[in-house]
Picture 1: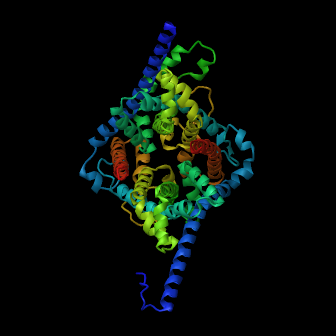
Picture 2: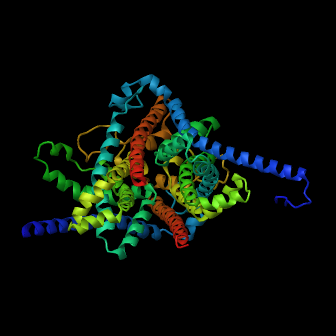
Picture 3: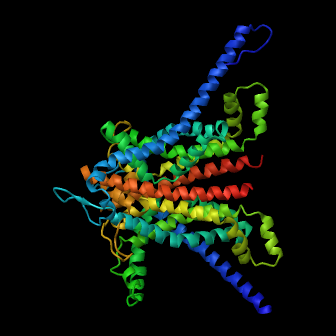
Length: 329
Length: 281
């Protein structure tokens, strides 16, 4: 509809009508946008409420014992025994190992890209990393299942087990027998998956360092490494930590990259070469066949995962917000 | 003095070497993944993949036609439902409520949703849609994808609208344009390529999502375009085929994986090209 032209011929009535139409459109649009913003808020509330409702039977049955029970026996009749300790352990252990591998490598790549890389390579390598961050996680999971797990199990694990066989503590962590389905293989796939993510964030954060600061340090005779260590990293610390926590949030909740190769075993064993499970893998592999309290317990696991990632992600956002404020100064 | 200098230079060299090896290490893994994907995926690529249905157990023929169709439908509907809500919410954050308390909360919650575990979103839709409707359906799958699309679009819309210079808005307002038209005609137009980029990236993000579809859309062995029934889709089909004992199923899984990756990468590249086109202006 076109707006009536305000020439001499228009009567005051026409103008009033047009203005009223404008006002109505304005109001409607404003409330539509506000409503949509509220929908975003409601989504979070909806997720939490829906999970609590679904998990309620399990909360009532197991209470706080759910968090400290190691046993997972859904088939037990009349009353199944279900505990979250196994999946919680697996989630934390795989994420920690993944972070131990991915953080140094990811930050190393970011330093390489921003400080050492010849300018000609900078863009193509950067773009490649960003594209790889977009590959769906199920692809990483498949590749881990068919390619990485067999390789690691046949070549890497036996060597490590033999090396540490007589070292106390380490011979428990790296105890055999090697298994295709293991916490370590899952963690390795996770690490490869979050690597581009950590690199991309760290690189963006490193690029916020004002060139003036870096050049003053170079002017004082610093080597590149000294500039990185004394200027770039202190300046961006909050941002890097925020990025690491975002990646941790991802690793904790990742499903498809780990489900195939973690083995879905609820046992807790000290060895990282033995099968285990994570919260998300447990949900993905058991939900379809579950019913009653078993299903409810899986939803409760989902609720735990959501709460866990919520705090990690919230902390990450606060760190990143701090960096932004610092830049604004 | 001289030895100190040598030591510093050596340290610098060591770090240089470590960073270079980190880059090589990272790129080798990622290159390996692409290599496996392409070599195994292309081996199974044929017309049958696009024309035949997913095979029953043990069969040596069959394709992914129903899964491809289901994936396209659910992705489009998910993006179609999520985009308007996301864009309007992003508009509120950038235009109306830039400094309001509500925007602060919405922004924070949106950032959390942006990286929330997708399997939890699957559980949410299971509880909120699948249970009340009495069964798994393509509709539920689309909604799960829409929930993932919304935060992505909110974020990019807000970012892109904030890039539009205020003088444009002021000039339009000075001509007597009401605020909603300033936003729709001026701000949206100025930010158009950015907004499209955001939508493309959101599409790429959900095209490969598996976890939220596992117990919402489920899967379906037959051709189905009825949204109220279970619907085949590429990610869940791959998930089911990877762990199967049948060689032919595994081959199809690789081919499906290649198709998804190509689609996702193509969307990313188009989004990137659009994004760089805008800058020189």
